[in-house]
Image (tube, rainbow, N blue to C red; front, side, top):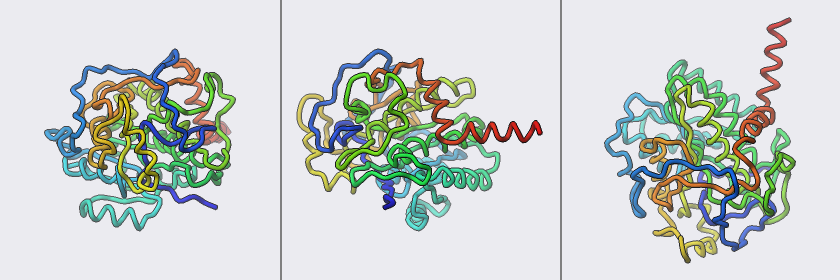
Length: 356
């Protein structure tokens, strides 16, 4: 049965299971980092624990700037859209449900645009990108926020493209979207922000599980299990590689963790609040959506150095567990992702047609 995509995804840093890790597993996140980590400059001003999204980059004007937020119809995505619209941006939101997207857009502002986007279908992503380019033409895209996603906690599934559902909706769909919108991002010297999770530190169940590509793309997992952590780990690696590849084109890329946020997704699971207790726990816990979205807006408006930014660490950049993966493997992961998304096949076909 086809899963409903939740636009409001809990992207917390100390909950939700991962590859071969059962939901509700209460193991502490391992703070030891293997060789090769996603790091960045930590000298930026950051944010305070109880800061509200309205106060981040309050003096920044986005007049004339275009912002696209996937899953912008609810929760963290909607809060982010509100904050950026208030600063004068032309805001575009996507939703799996066009009706819900239109309703949300109307509540944000009369000129906010809403589109249908099915991240679980590669064709659906291409259809949206084509519609976006048709409507916006050569106008640059200034900020792309890859926010939408699913947890996978209510059952695994396979997409129409044959991929495990959480992997495609959270990672591969956004990867393809970013690639298709890259000309617009280059025109706007834009920013790409991947909303990830600290559960990337538990992307798989054994050490060095990602030292090669044998577990990618992932397969479906059993009951009460999810590929959530792995999908978010891939989003972090995607942002890190993009930052390197697109630096000369003026495009910056970031990945962020909003922390444990009070949303429709987290409320049915009171056990998640166990992560609010103990050394290093975020405070306040959980965040409101307007506190959690601070990190996304911080990356959009304030952060300068690409990296992995954590809300519960006062919006500073840090490191993520690499599970045996190394920075030198990122270009290969990028090319494999292009193949999984069908981009290399399309490119090869176009080259063949041009030569015939």
